[in-house]
Image (cartoon, rainbow, N blue to C red; front, side, top):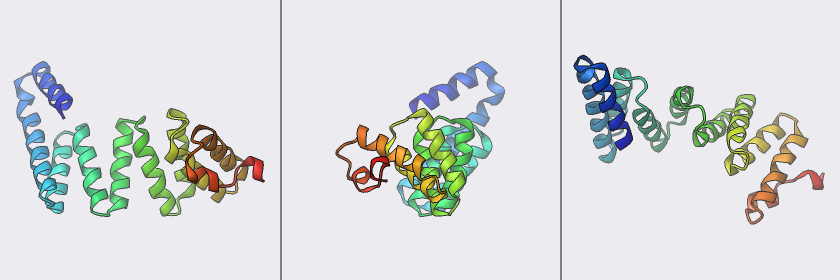
Length: 173
């Protein structure tokens, strides 16, 4: 949060006093959302984070807080929509790529899930969730060899992880 406050303060300084109320309003909504989140007031937290984003669409901390509240309250589809918006601004955040891919797999959006896992693995070739998700999506799409390659890569990089030991790899086909 500190880097964000510094960034917003610096932005306010650079663009002049006319924008300061705008930034202050976004920060106030965000802080109110964090308080509501801590008190487990889900709807209030969601409303506050949405308000902060509406005031300042590039407020990354507010986007991440909104995603967290959606996930914590079991609203995975809404979380996926928020992750998509977040990833438009921050495309290299592997954690959200993998999580979005997992949600897409749950929704039987296998091709879209495969794309998310592919993007995650492009950034982090040994991401466990990315490898497992990619393997699952690839197999569901009939790409057995690609799925087996991901499992084999996981086995080599994570030899003690049981998830890669139980999945079929190239050598077992």
